[in-house]
Image 1 (cartoon, one colour):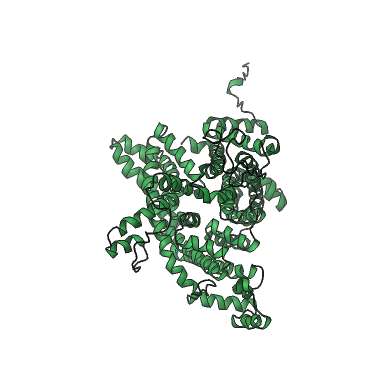
Image 2 (image 1 turned 30 degrees about the horizontal axis):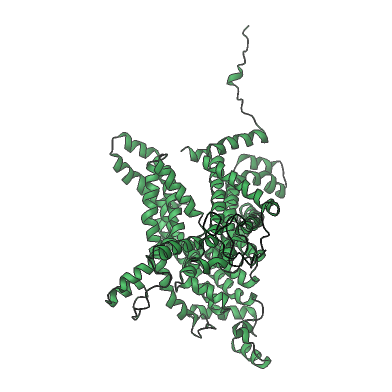
Length: 304
Length: 336
């Protein structure tokens, strides 16, 4: 009689389940130092936006008439009352920047949710049904892609009228084709998998097949795209604000602040520099995070 | 190859009609009817309004209006500008070379810097050069270029006083445009200092406009190189003792360039979007600034015409990129 010896070490001990999946993802993500820094900074900005009313030293639109264009505290003529100085009509720069974080994050969230939801539905439909549905959806997306992004946004805002809401709608429209194309491509690759055929054979209904069987397997590239388009949305919204077609003064939106500051560029460097630094750092943090997400979802690529 | 070209052309037709439809619908979606839009802020009497509606054919069924519009467009008639009273096509063509010149110089700078940086970063992967250049590239990619332009103006024009702040050439020079490209025209004019003046006006805006494409090209070149460096044929080339220079130059770079060429081609749209901001900041008299001005002046026929021309241009350039891609990568034209 021979005994069957089960050596636990040779059994596959990888854990399964959501928590384990997340831990695996996190261990890859953590390896990328830039991504972690990006994530930390992003959390910081989110906190700043949420707590804006509490941490901002002044009201964003309060005009201190006796302290116009005051430089930051470290420069001669500055004071610690206004740490980053004041703008041309005496508003505290720091407080406006802090409140501006709200608008940028808000724009990013709304734009990404809008274009993600609509884009995923259209992409699923195109990839799943093929034929005429596919042709029509994709040709319409080709047309949207034919216009340089900012140009189409400008024109849409010209039709809808300049405001932050309309700027967000316009930016969501110009980002739509990327989601549609991405979803369609991943749906088509997932459709050939055996588990989809199996689901079809046992008679799973179409809607369930689309959203429960196929969609979750297309999520990784969509999440990466969402992160990257979050930063593009912030940039585009700031650009529209800068051109006077986004958020309207006196809203403390970073792009709009830059537009108001333009005439003072050679006299007061701080009114031009700080809003731009805020945009750059936020966008950079999100892009770092996006790169980290991409590498973590696709470890093969990273190690090639 | 011919069937590949025909297939690409076939997709182009619906796209072009879609673009005309967008331009056609645009002017009808604006608040007020097209005649009121053309009249601008002044307004007009009821009778004059009805007369104009008839004159422009706005009383006809929409489908007929669209067909007439298509016919006009195909004959090169894009309507008249409300502000300059000249045909939109003429206005567009007089400003277009300025944008093309700016974009060409910008993309040249972007390629000259981005390509070698991406290559070296891939070959020297993990070294300080790789880290620093890729951090710089990501920063450039994240840059709000309207702010970047303002910073460059503060530093180079304001503090160092190296370059002028706006325009294409100093007002001291005047000559008839021959090609529309200021660099060539100023050189042809033979006036002393004209060429230098044109260069000094062009350099800052083109660096600003080239920043994002430069970052994209550097990043893409690096990842394309890394992918090819991991291929078996590169290992074989190394194993049989080829000089590293030859492995990188012949085996790696050639194959890595295929996706990079596409990326460079796709920058046309990025350049146009960037030109809108760059031209506004530097008061560069090109298409981007003209579009922004037309929108703020409510010169909608110009916006409509510009929209159509720019989108058609982008579509045609992208077609050429596709064809070029098919030419250098035979795999593409044989797959569906």
